[in-house]
Length: 290
View 1 (cartoon, rainbow, N blue to C red):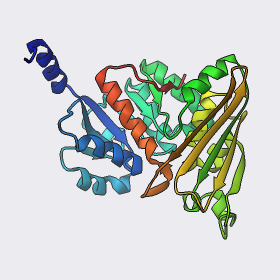
View 2: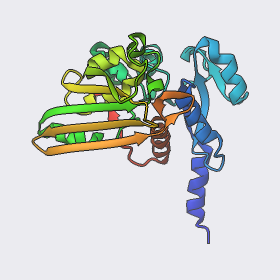
View 3: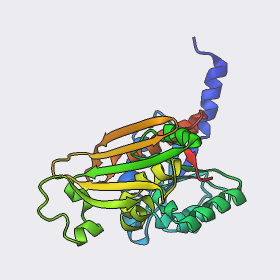
């Protein structure tokens, strides 16, 4: 038998879905959109607005239909966002996320590699404090960040992140420009340095390294090694750490997006999980900018 009180509660929740504005509609943004657009039986989340570059507005509007507002600027949207999810790249933090936070709009951020810039991170902190809202950093394609953060509280001696991807995933990067990808037959290290340098030189591949740095010992002390592997079919992320707690090793072999091999599908799934838990009112496991 249906409990009228529970049914009433469900109807109340259905009448007021969490309104989400997507910033970006590439491989990640379109996957997040499709996850909820294809599930009308779960109306707890409504992606009702999308912000993209000016050249993409008409194309995205055709794809999503007239019920979704598409604009190139936050100020051109017909409604003030309730919650914004950024998945557009580092430039979107200063252009869109910081103004939204200052105006009191909660934001979830995928492009956390941008926070290798300390000034930008401070500006994001200040904007969130001014707007009295939370900025959540999404874990993306890497796991074990909660354990790494706990270990950091007791003191860490060293942290290493190793990113191994197929050769084509590194096209358009400094390694490609230097000819390092030509004729590779075995797994080859194309970069070995700090997480901060990774964010500067490999911004489209830096979000995992940044997540590890923020959870652990920071951008200068986090060592990053990037490998191009012609035998790889997945993007493999390995985190190793040693400290007072002992030793940690976490490895994820993530399937890349076909339309963007630089990005792991798990990144979009982390955003989808965040939204579902945020809409449900359950506790959400996500780092904050502070």
